[in-house]
Image (cartoon, rainbow, N blue to C red; front, side, top):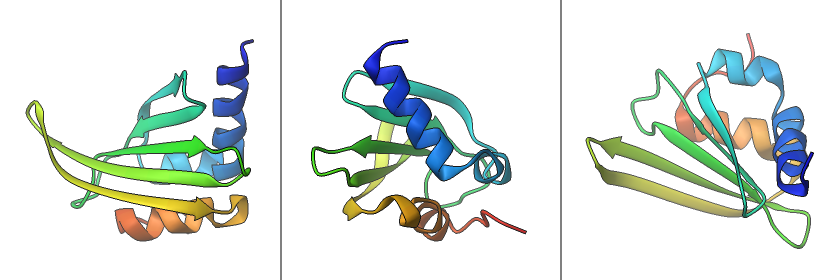
Length: 99
């Protein structure tokens, strides 16, 4: 397993499988820039999320909404701690991460 895949697996584990199920996440993809990208269903604000691990062991989260081939909305957050990942993503998606 390469380092990029292990970082993506760590991000997935820190967010939690249950949250991914609640968000209807699909098409998860590990990237060469130590990130995990996934598509969500049910959010009216954003359709894709990218979580990147930075050099300070903090996370940067980018939210995207695509219409056809163009990206119409983005929001970028930096300095997110591990324990805040799930709650921050859920708040911006306006979707529950827990029952």
